[in-house]
Amino acid sequence: MKKSKLQILTNGIIRENPVLVLVLGTCPTLAISTQAINGLGMGVSVLVVLTCSNIMISALKRIIPDTVRIPCYIVVIASFVTMVQLALKAYLPSLDKALGVYIPLIVVNCIILGRAEAFASKNSVIDSMLDGIGMGIGYTLTATVMACIRELLGSGTIFGHAVTAGTITPFTIMVMAPGGFFIFGTLIAIVNKLTKGKVKDKQQNKCLGCPGAAFCSQKVEEGGAEE
Image (cartoon, rainbow, N blue to C red):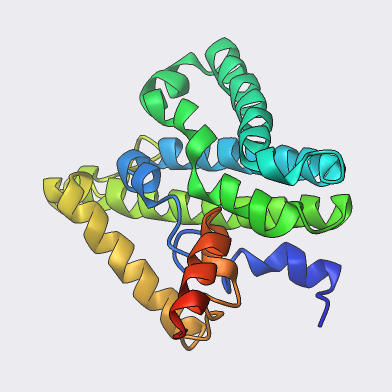
């Protein structure tokens, strides 16, 4: 059944949230979510790259040869990542410095490449744009919420403004790796509760958009057993 435009736009916010449901792009999310401004900045950067690359890949899907589609997708994504990075260096140098290597690494972010392969290469430009916006909003909300919680509990501030000064002693562990995993797991549990665990089957979702999904499923069929 074909989804409506509204369903495509809202799908990535909760039901198929790229981080909390599809569990993609977790490494940069955990790494940068120590401060709210970093989470928001990374989220908006991913949203812009994801939306623009989805539009471009959808527009070029009939031109790109199937045999070299992944390298072509990466070239498209890298072009938009470079634009975003140059814009950050020019207008938000402090944010660019804080995010560091994780901005260039958007090129190989599983969310971007996964949506290009699983959605943009098979759907219209408008639908691909809506998918990119929805998934980007879902990622931005996740990264920002995680960062706000970790910054509040770990430093007593939100977006650099003191909130719990003199009332609660900050838990330094929250801005360290164990705190990140704890908040990440807690948010996954909350989303799983809200969706009642109704996540699409991995086979139906083509292994969450992994470029190697076709090869893996072919191997499974050859083995005569499929989960």
